[in-house]
Length: 275
Image (cartoon, rainbow, N blue to C red):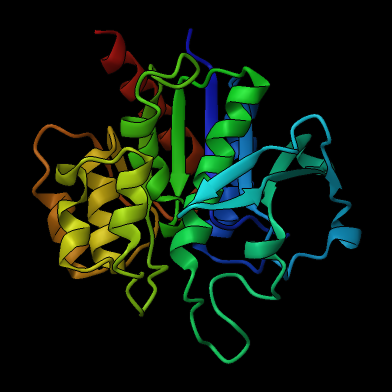
């Protein structure tokens, strides 16, 4: 097992957010992969409903201070970190007052999805990739969990395709039942093209930037796919089923051999890359 570095770009991690398929896998999978001899880095957004004092988050000054431009507006990038002591695992948090100060994840207390979730997602995934570059930590494999992390696949494959830290990394997308209801704003196409996306990359989003379309974009551009929830949208299940040359790991739930199954899947992807 020569290739050991795995980057997790995750939408939710327990105990920082309530338990769900994503947050439980986000908590347990990195620990299990680390215990099997791989080096990991784990990221999530610093959503406003995360209690910083209770969870002992603190800013990493040497990594903070960069500005990311989205739609001609500068947004300061703040990096925070916390430790899950029982797992001997650090979690990095991407923060910014414009996007993550509000007391919710992707929707407000009344259940209304935030209108700027497109820009929040763009900021998050760009923040992760820029932080990895600043750390000079070169991942062999990137594993994205949840729709909020889906655009990391587009950015890695297109905008960061020639970056020395990222260009050789393989990328996996885990599909969950974490769907949003209101399509992202139509001008997400313009924002992504400004950053370097091609028209052909965005074919799915041109129909509408809904959950299914965003998920299909991530599935199409990834190197491999994992079904993270037992039940996913039928359109996505059908789309995954017709994949011919792309490795797919079916849903395994939280069985005792779950982490070994994923770790073996990682090895399969990495060995395929060497072949």
